[in-house]
Length: 89
Image (cartoon, rainbow, N blue to C red):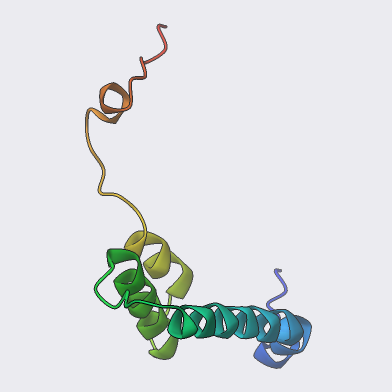
């Protein structure tokens, strides 16, 4: 029989780490906001905004959905595209 932790246990264990990550993200966004120029249309900033929306929604699999936001679509010939050769058997 497998032990499944209670949500309160997971929150207690991870709260300070999550708080730290959120503070760091907030600080990064503050530095961008105080800097000269505007990056609102930068594709990276758009992805960050989309990731924040994923975090705020009530759906499951947040980590997977955020990873997919930042991932390239699969290309059949990716090895050739990146100058790599498949290993010979």
